[in-house]
Length: 288
Image 1 (cartoon, rainbow, N blue to C red):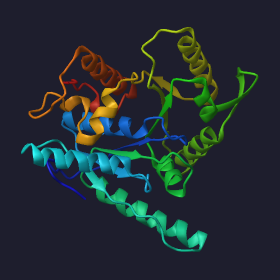
Image 2 (image 1 turned 90 degrees about the vertical axis):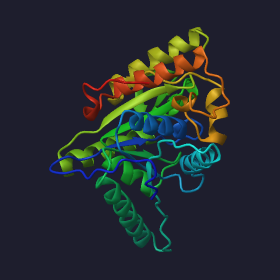
Image 3 (image 1 turned 30 degrees about the horizontal axis):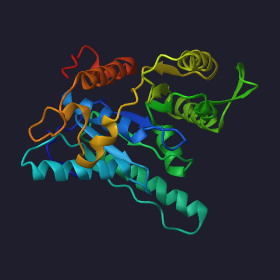
């Protein structure tokens, strides 16, 4: 676990970190980009943040942070870095023993971060895994990015002939529902499910409004809240090699010229934080 550039503070009393799971069961929705920007935004607001990268195959979040660390060393500067808990897959060939091993690994990682972090961000894989189900069941907030397209609606619900008023929950929605039931039964707490439109087109086309109307209908049927998403911007693809975020573009050594498009992108990030309604941020000003 890396502790660079993080002011350590042990949580006391009944204070518990807020666990945010960024997840769905579809690749290419931008989960890691959202998770990285969310984690670093919380750090820019003075919060200690821990991260668990559950995509044990691609490890996009982990590689993003490695690029960030390398860039900072090259530029002889410091950047906010979240605490990273390295979680390993189980090795047993027996399914029951494998799941027990993974549950133990999950609890060890979670416990280590809970001692010092105000927030824990989990970057879930784009598939249904035992670790992903454990994370969803422990979440306080589930944030689900989906591409701004009707194709991604199948992630949330299955409809007959496009009739969303009678849509049935998809496999992922059913998994979230089961996680919410377990949380309510075991901890007597609720999970706030927030769906955000990601990679939104800059063109105000008719299909864009149809997507918005469709999600509004689904939110009532499936019980999630809607959050404003991130626009489709080239900048997100350009940032990965350096490990920078939208909040680092004015750092010394950044070769990316800050533009009005980046100002708008930062506003999208601020809007997301506002809609998430995180209790630990209540009354706090967003300084970026």
